[in-house]
Length: 123
Image (cartoon, rainbow, N blue to C red; front, side, top):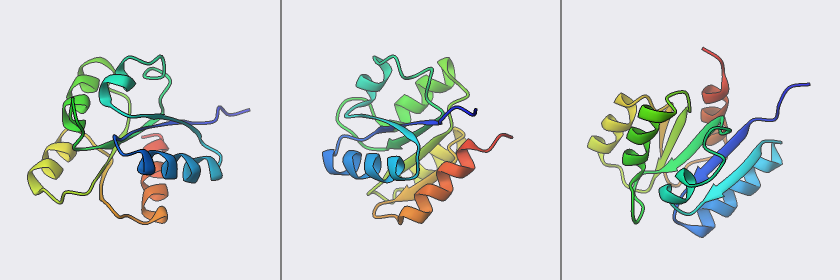
């Protein structure tokens, strides 16, 4: 039997974390949520994460900094960035760093789920 993919969500907005947890669980993914990049890095879920949904701008470590750290230590985790800020420089940096997608809030459930499916597809 195939393992249920674990999707980790890192966003400093409670409502975003909880709504994404509900959406992802409704389509039968395992979900863990974290309020900061530091909380995620300190967890035992980093190595188990099959896909990371990551906010760009957060207090403390930014999503882009977390992406850089993961590329150095866990290069296989596909990342989907979510942000309320349409900054083309951040988008370009995220995609150059290997992000699967870069979604502007508010995004549709369909757009997010399509990005997750793309991230979980083997190369």
